[in-house]
Amino acid sequence: MRPALKNGSNAVRTLKRPQALSALQRACIVRTGVYAGPFFAAAIFSFAYLVGSTTAGARPNIVLLFSDDQGSIDLNCYGASDLHTPNLDGLAQRGVRFTQFYVGAPVCSPSRASLLTGRYPQRCGVPGNVHSRPGYAGMPTDEVTIAEMLKSAGYKTALFGKWHLGTIPECEPLAQGFDEFLGHRGGCIDNYSHFFYWVGPNRHDLQKGTEEYWEDGTHFSDIVVREAGRFIEENKDQPFFLYLPFNIPHYPVQGRAEFREMYKDLEEPRRAYAALVSDMDRSIGNILEKLDRTGLRKNTIVIFLSDHGHSTEERTNFGGGDAGPYRGAKFSLLEGGIRVPCIVSWPGEFPQGEVRDQMATSLDWYPTIAEVCGAKLPDRKLDGKNLLPVIESAEAETQHEIFHWQQGDQWAVREGTWKMVLNAKDTDHRKNLEGDDKVFLSDLSVDVTETRNVAKDHPDVVARLTEAHEEWEKEVVNR
Image (cartoon, rainbow, N blue to C red):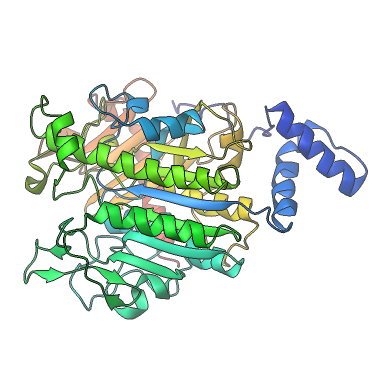
């Protein structure tokens, strides 16, 4: 038997917040002379955003915060009891926090590509990690990023942080819609020397625009915060899109002295990892404070999420992050590799201090941002869905009836509360699921831990999801 989607299927969405509905009623009455009633509330909601976006100064800024290798529950507001994350917890108090939020892949490059394009990694041409060496292609140049979409709508755009989507000029940030870039193009750097050490030869990987940039000894997070603050100040009188993909808590685990002292009583590898999480939290707090000081906070949508689950690689001391009840970590299509923390905040417009249990994905931010900013969507297949109904109401239906992942020989399908994984890698325990567990089916409504395989009990579900994924594999190559 197939578990039902949360809140049923294809139900007409309505807005819960009286103040929002009242504003939408007024907008509809002014433009049409009638109010159609709650049956058309969702349509009116979208219409009101589009109308508002054409008003000078009304379009919201977008600040997209992207952490690197962060565990599924590694914020206080997600259940961590040993971390100090007051700024991100405060962001959740001023916004909406998602509990079933997924990224498009359990590794860096495809997760970033799907976020920026609203498309499955396979559809946008980045099925796996892009090489960090100079001279390697990455995300195809004909992909339309959020930055390109918003730039066409009159937004100023900037990226300060980690790129990891190609190192040839036509694949670099300035060729993908960003007016400004300062950061590293490869997968990771030393935070102080800004050298990439992990595949020889060692090389310096800090770039400003299209030119190499040196700032020896300055912690990379400080560079990101400084440049973000400058960009906000310089563009406070026009709409902007600011993408800040932090390179932490990804290795190298170089926590600063005050945070090492804060966590001195924790055991390794949690101690070093925790210092990086709090370091990032403080950096984000500085950026939020800048928005407050410039008076832009109420006209800025802030989105925070991680690129995937925590790392258990040797370079990160074999762990440190925490997926809570979820199995797996980075590189795995089990929940701990792809279920991440995600928060969105727009004070005065979006609900505050609320939680959403509906399934949502990082691909959904593309059409959602387009909607609130009044930007024209590109003429191509998008796999993301507009999240506005879910943001507005805990009773809205889940936007995805089915969702797919593919990472090497691993693949997974989520349909309602069913989740099936083939060739799963349990990277948290450093083993592959084999034998009877090669095909692993879970009902997440009763087993979020993915430890009870019910595939033999539901052969009809296994057959249906297998067929659905085979069809998806054929279709997703259509770009």
